Length: 185
Image 1 (cartoon, one colour):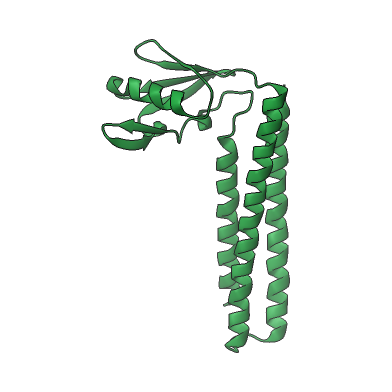
Image 2: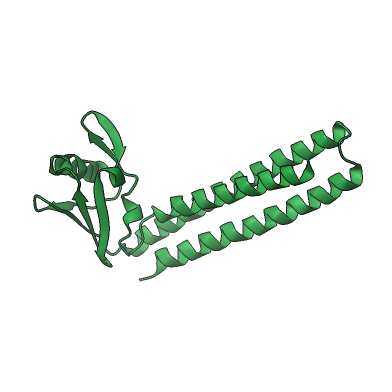
């Protein structure tokens, strides 16, 4: 029973960390990354779809993204979605491929991006704390139902705290790495 609660907590913490990594991948750095535009919603035949379902996205150079639609009719919709996004990048279109030239961010823009990274990392920490709280409630319920002893509950709480600390360190390390990547010139 205790193992089930701890295993469930670890699974949720792992998912929270993966979600944070995915979210941070979409934050723009000086380098071109397909993650910048993969989830960009594109209005296509009256339906919103993520860009990665409509086109092949590649980074042939460190400051260039190419987007090759599977259906050439989607090129205008993709171009419009990029222009309306918060990326601040103008697409160039040759009729078959859309090219996005990623400009070098200014120092001021980098500081804004670091603030965004820190906010996302804090959201990740909050998610971990919420998972810990749910697991603690589960352990208290087991104790209240007399399914486990007080000593078992205390040991399980300590194990849960160690697990939480481990994932907190991973989340912090991920955030620190992304901050360094954003500030890199």
